[in-house]
Length: 154
Image 1 (tube, rainbow, N blue to C red):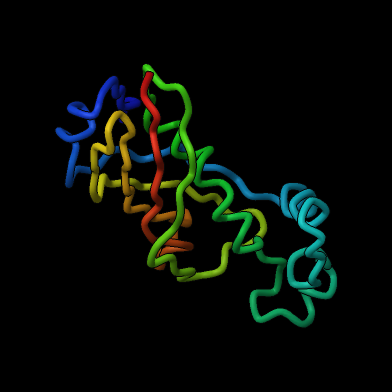
Image 2 (tube, one colour; image 1 turned 90 degrees about the vertical axis):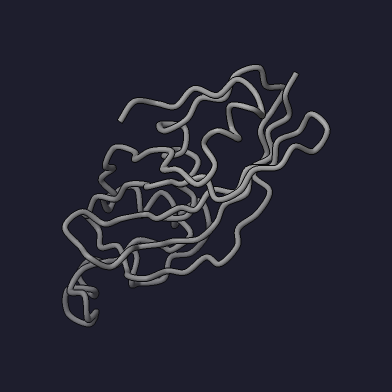
């Protein structure tokens, strides 16, 4: 799917209720997990101790931090949409966010995004994106919810 180009509120409004796009798959490997653990000081063994996870985890491998999965949302979102004529874009919040299934080290995930709602707030666009982070080859979703972004147009 090609990247969506948006230049104004009116162009956002035309996308309401539609699938905005699907990102590329991204491999989440142990190195990325370890770097996230270092950045967040979350070194829980289920994420970083591969030997212990093989023996004690029900998954038989380490799992990706839930917040690492969530933190990849802006990366994926930028693959799907390009919003022009901006001063800035701000992450405003998350609603109805649910982790459905653990992502295992070495699995690939991607974003599927629909425009849930859009509002014009005097030159600022508030866009709510229904998002699903899928795990390649799995029926259950890694994460889903509604992300809200504020787009400040020039």
